[in-house]
Each structure stands twice: as structure tokens, then as C-alpha cells.
Length: 161
Length: 383
Image (cartoon, rainbow over all chains, first blue to last red; front, side, top):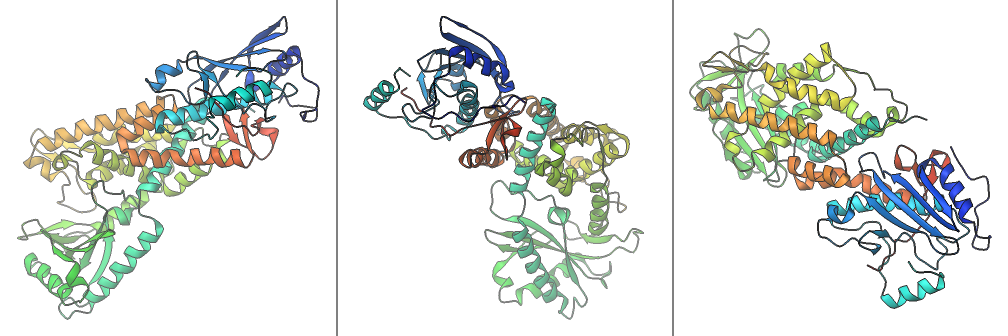
């Protein structure tokens, strides 16, 4: 099983390059997929099945070195599954872009591996999404803050969403 | 480590069905409470001069371990027999029933709970149980230790054998079918599958069928097949599967048992026949012969039950599975069945032992060796 040999990097650790992120994504079996880095921009497409009873989702990560990772669900169409209901915890509805962590808190930082943060959180988001489809209640916790706070957090994180 | 996704799926579904059945049945505390109560009634009846030596025992779903919470009332049915060992056919059923009723009326508590039914007396413990007490006498013509109980009109004694029936059911429930994938590495230790094995797959199948029937016939209960019919057909089909079949796993067995049920109904062109194998002269399908719609209703329900469960095993998406469970078994039962998994994900996450393992997805893990740990996060969102 692919595992980190390095100590967990804290906020003070140097940022990982897009190529390092790509290598980590490639070597972790939970994020098995295809992708590339061009001009410092990482694109990674992988499939996620949150548990054996769930659907298999196709996810896309885009990450510009120095920015923040963006996660989109390509298939199936989450909006269609939600049947008119507004998706919770997304930056945008279509294509759905997931809000996986609270910016500015260090939950994610450029020194952390996408394969060990963003990817498992994508699984977790999708698990709670199916639960939400059934119950109508988002049980994964989190925040839906005021637009002003979002603005501040985004600036603090040096990027949008 | 190779994980067969199909086996993982089926193991989780088995767990969901197991949880649902557990939530539908009498709790151990309720069972003890019921037992305490009917033993006390039994002592009271046995001390009566006319009923000297009589005893009470439980039969039906409580005795068999196949209880399901009723849909429209709070009380579980607890079926009791008051056996009068010195009783003979000479005593008209109506008289024996009256003697039992009179004795119950002599008791300060029972008289307030008492309700007269066609051929039995009911003690109505509101919110808890309906204890139905049917008088019985020995059946000298039955070589299998059967008894006689009043017919519906209280005119005649008719044969039955609750003790023998229970014994046969228990023997069948203990049969261990051959399951090929029983010892898959990961799921051999699975708690739910283990629990299912202890309770016995047969009892769970009977519970699933009975609950499915209750939902299916919610608006026309008069057409619903009797529990004794479902139980008998399931037990006979289970025995056949256990003796002669080989199955991948519990869900494969479940479908085969369900499919085999109608094979134990006979129809000779005019008479429906589902015999009580433990005595002579009791036909559980007796009512079908007076009202042919009942046979049609059974077959329609049975077809729906098989296809609902087959579909459930193929469905993808937790929401789809919950919806299908809800349609087939009721929305409360469906959410109760799914809730423990939601709770487990939540508590594993809070305790920081949630991981993503390849081929499994989210799983509770003691260490990161099972996969990639899910680090703490706060779902955010502007939309």
C-alpha cells in the first residue's frame, strides 16, 4: 500500500510542486486515475466510490501551483440526482465544485498532499451527498458562512474557492 | 489484499437487512416482560378447580423468534395456549372457553384488561402486548402429541400442534446451508453477518416476508396471507435449500428460499392445501378454499416480494437503496436500518479513525495500514 514515508508536513513546510502532487496522486491506490501537469497546472481525473453500496463517481481535480485545488464531479450528474434541490457545500452548482475544507485554517495548505487531503475528503463528501439525497439533511457538518466571511477567507488563502 | 466489491456490497446489504429485522422484533426486555406476564396468568389459571393442572405456553411468532412490529398498532401479538390436560372432546369448546374467561374475570387486574375474541380471550396490555389465550385439550388421535382447539364458531374441536410445529421449525432453522463465500477474509469477522448466523437466516427471511406483506397489504389487510402460511412455506423452502443447495452467500440463499416458497402449496384443481405437517387435518390454506381471491393475493404478493428483494441486491446508491427499503418495508424501518452506518461514519470521523481503503471506500480503521486516513476537515460552501 502506498504510504507516506515523510513526516506529516505542517503549515511551515515548503509547498509541494504540482509535479510532486501528481506523483503522489499516481502512487496512491485510492486516487487511481489519469492526469498531467502542464505549465504548473495539475489536472487529475479519478473515480471515487465512497462505499460498496454507493455509485461510482468520476471526479476531476484542477490545481494551479500556488493556488487552491478545485474538485469537480463530472459524472453522474449530481444536479439530476438531486432532482431540483440545491446541492449543499459546493462553490458552484454546475458543474458541481465541492467545498471540502475551511480556507484559512490550515486544513489544506500547499505543503499538504492532495492525495491525502482533498481525495479522502471527496470520498467523504460523496458519502454524505448520497445520505443527503435520502434524508434531505446534510449530516457531514461544516459551514455555510456569510459572503463577507467567504471573501475574507478566500483572500487569506490567496485564492478563490 | 483483494476485496471482491460484490461480496463487500452484499455483506453491507446483509448488515442493513439484519439491522432492520432487529429493530422490528421484540427486544429482549420486552420478551422477558411478556414471559413474566404470561407465566403469572398461567399460574392463576392453573390454580382454578375446573382448570386444575392447566398450563400456559407461548406459540406463534414470539415462540418462533419471528416477531415483527405491527404497522398500525403499538401492541405485539403474544399467542398463548392454555392447555387443559384432562380435557376431552365431550366438553363443548364454548364451555371450556367460558371457564377460562370466568377465571380471568375473577382476577382484579385481568378483568380490566380482558377482551373477548372469537375463539380466545385477549389480555390487552395497552402499548405493549395483546396476549391471546386459546384453550386447548389433548388430541388422542394425533400420534405426534397434537392438541385440539375450538374452531371459529366454537362448535367443534379442530386439530393443531403448536409444540410440534415449534420443534420442527427450530430443527429447520438450525440447518446450516452451504455458503461458498462464507469465509471471505474481511467479512468472516463482520459483526452483522455473525449476528445473522446466530439468529438464523430462516427467522430473518420470515421477518422480512411478514413485514413486506404488512406493507403490501396495508390498504386491504383482509387479503394478506397468514403469518403461519408465510412461516411454513419459508421453513420448508429453507430446509430444501439447506439440504440440497449450494449458495454464494446469505443473500443468494435468501432469494432461493423466497423463490422456493410456492413449491410447498398444493392445488388439485379445486382445493388449496398447505398442511400442518405436525398433525393430521389442519390446512393452513383452509380460507383460500372459501375465498379464492386469497390464493391470487398470495401469488401477487410473493412475486412482488421476490422482485423487490432481487432489485434491492442490484441497486446502486445509498439513497436508492434506502428508497427501495422504504417502499418495501416502511420508511421508519428503512431509516432505522441505514442509521447505524451513518452513525459509524460520523463517530469514526470524529475519533479520527476513518480511512479510505482501495476497493472498499470509507472504513473505520485502527491505523493507516487499512488505507489513507481521512484528516479532519470542515465542509464549506458559498452556494
